[in-house]
Length: 64
Image (cartoon, rainbow, N blue to C red; front, side):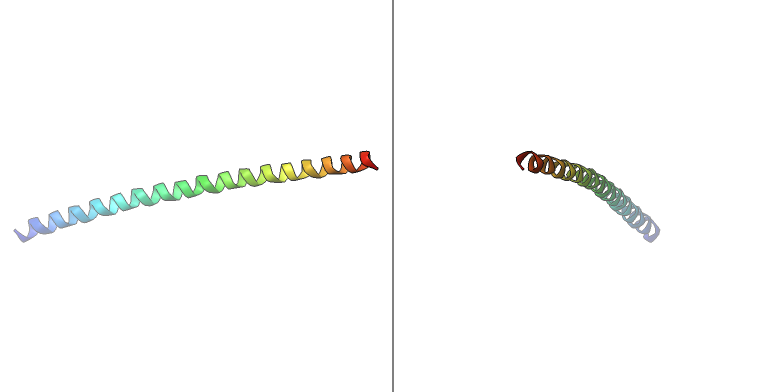
């Protein structure tokens, strides 16, 4: 009887650990996707910044 209860407890513990592990992997993957999106946004911001600087330079030369 005690062996059966131990087996059942071990089974429940293993299932809980597996579920926690899957959740942790999902969270890690979501974090990685968010990081990649942030890098892409940073690149876009830099590109827009350079474009604005060029436009500002052209406008100043046109006005003077």
